Length: 68
Image (cartoon, rainbow, N blue to C red; front, side, top):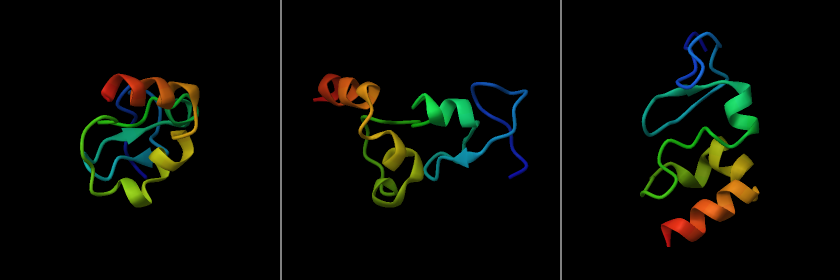
């Protein structure tokens, strides 16, 4: 991918947010820390690998409840 993680700049990005073009490492993806804007509108959400992998996690359920 050639980019580095937003949260861990020393690590290479494994996925990229399509909306914001920000890279995230495997740890961020595994811990559901990779969605740049989980409460806002995202036209890419239907095909987003980040969203699909995290949408059933406890963290995602908590965020959804907070967002309304």
